[in-house]
Amino acid sequence: MKTFLWVYTLLFLDLFFLSGWIPGQETEHIWTLEGCIQQALDHNIQLQQMMLNNETNRIDILQAKAARFPSASASITQNFAWSREVLSDNRFGSINATNNTDYGINSNVTLYNGFRINNTVRQSELNYRIGQLDTEVMKDDLCLNVLDAYLQVLYSAEAVNNSRNQLEATAEELSLAVERLILGAVSKSDFLLIRAQLADEKLTLTNAENQLALSKVTLLQLMEIPVSDTFTIQLAPLDTTMVPYRMLNTDSIYTLALQARSEIKSAALTIQTADLDVSLARAGLKPGLSLHGSLNSGYTSELDEYTYGDQLKNKINPAIGLSLSVPLYQNREVKSKIETANIGILNARLNEADAKNQLRKTIEQACIDISSSMKEYDASVEKYLAQRESFQLASEKFKLGLINSVDFLFEKTNLIAAESNLLQSKYKLIYSIRILDFYTGRPLTQ
Image 1: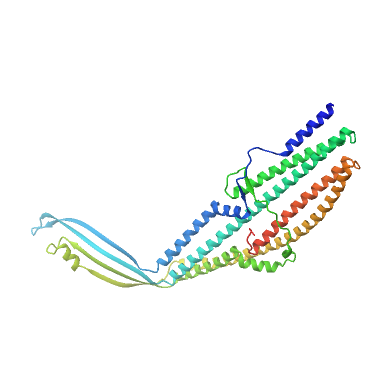
Image 2: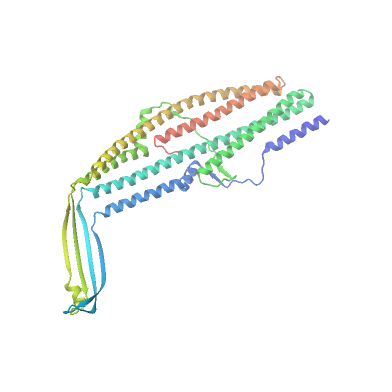
């Protein structure tokens, strides 16, 4: 009787902890992949900083364009002076005080400086566009990180669900074993084997739940959201029928990626800015021509016979002129700038070539990954279906007492392994396909 009480007590505790019920858990919001990505894009601090930094390039455009217009400045100068009068007998007389007020307006405009202004405007516009493209590259990297974390949460959630289902099935088997133990149909050692299996599966479930929690933390941190137990993502079924990718053409995908990827466009524009650096450097060898003008007037107390207004009106002095500067020798400064700019062009071309090479290598690797993932997934499906059928047969035999616990648990262990391999291959395939979609310009959220 004590044995039966001990068995039922253990079974009750197993079923209680198996339920996994925790009071007070409620779901606040269900996040989709699109929502997670948008949240990350809206709140990522590094991305916002890059966008702000690019605003300085926009200001540089306005500054460069403003150089085409004349500059103007106004000035007012007020002077007070004191001096002693020198008399005819070389003696010093009384102190005379004078004050002078001068007004002036000056303007200057560049007529020619080797097209430096126009090239500066073009370069500023290119730099702003490069900044936009670099921002897109950062956005893409962030989206890929969110996709990876999102799929990891889905994988972990499905692993938890599988572990829980396995645990529930083992609990039912333990309940059957209890009945058979009471009837004397199985030995206590067989019963303890099933109970040990239940304990192992509890540990597996705990590890899966811990991994799910860690995966959620990673995703929440990418989204810049405080960690919350109520965070839930949409557990939508994911398609693994990848017919369009059964026949992969690396060259066509690479061609599409060259036209779509922001880092390639940015590298090409960087070459153009390097070309403009050479033009700007060569402008130092060319003469400069500018037009300047001024308008001045003033008042002095020494002309006390004229009023303040009369002096200002009659002392107006307009002036206009041209200024030509011709560089003769500049201590090799301009030549050094030209040589440095030419090196910059070569370096920009190498950077573009490197960006294209990296893109090609990434696509080649993605094609290999997706091909191997498809084969692995197909094999995992086939193995899982066969193992599930074998386990179902073993379950029937175990219920009828035709096989012992060792043989039954062996079949179940194989099923668990097959199910785990299938789950891993499934998400590996999904991630590989999303990566390839990404490089062909397809949004990650589709």
